[in-house]
Image 1 (cartoon, one colour):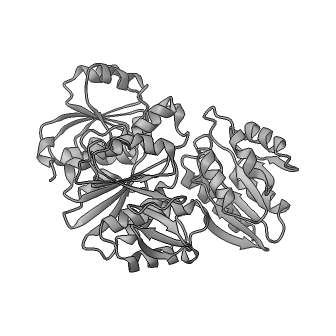
Image 2: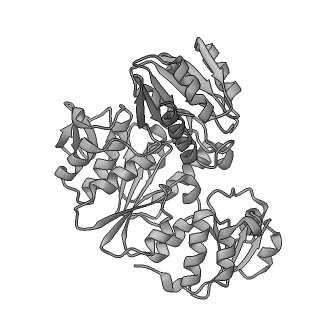
Image 3: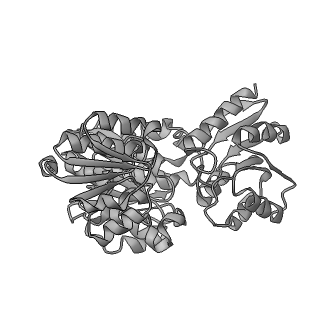
Length: 450
């Protein structure tokens, strides 16, 4: 049951705009809250701030003044990207002011059933698959969250006839209080975003907030093969539904005799699945489990898995030029994602990698470089990647300025049958505003080869 009426008259500080803050401010205004918006970007170059001001909202730009907290504030809606080490956020915590992300706001606005998907890798693919598998059921699936559509904005447009399938990051999940999905999906846990969370333990705890409000009437789909995930879901109150690529789990999803199985029922042969890569099976098993729990038919699941070739920027086939295949895996923003991408191909690989330096090394990649014939690197982490490439014995190692320049250099080193793979193992923010823009730059550069 939605709680929109509870927002009326609330004094709310919205910190940080971008898509989520912009949407949250408009929704809070719509339902009668009194709002102040604060954004670091200066007012003159901030179209969102200008639009909100024209709507009658007080907007303060250019800094995060502590004086904002001298006002009466019922709660704060924080952009997920703003760290909790921000001085304004730290003082707000000291004052015991609740700090939410717009994901929490979504729980005030919808009557729709919720599915929440989190994990270090595979969230977007799994979210997309579940949404597609639920088409044709008695509820209309709506995909939102970290996948691109602001969750609170989507939630406000849904009814009991809908089901929201939400990709949720650790940044978003840290800012929830009462948000509760009927089905939670926890894919895996790998060292990521430690510059934001500080420790792996804190990162895992942020992820585990996904199911903290679930009850015995809800479901928790989780990766039985991931020890960290098993430990984090140990005390959940919801029904545990495991998935595994290694073990037979009669109460969950698994592989048996080359079939994808769910609770003893064969769904389809693994060989019928179009999506490349053994690592994709984890995402597929999680998707099958969640979709079956929510009424998806075997026919629809089979149709999706036989035709779904992947999401943009995640092992996305771009094109073949003179017998060389190009794949865009710009969404691979950590080492594990790149390891899995490399393992998806048997052909010699020319790897394009590099990006934001978060302080980690890349030695874990060395065992995966056996059939990588060349490394073309860029961005802040280039020196670290060059070091491990030399240790792995790669003969062709080259540094370039950016992805656009990396593509033609990679093509020069490629032969018929080779694969050029953009799989950076790093976030994009040192050179590009998003992994999407980095991937689009790659695609454009590949097209120019012709």
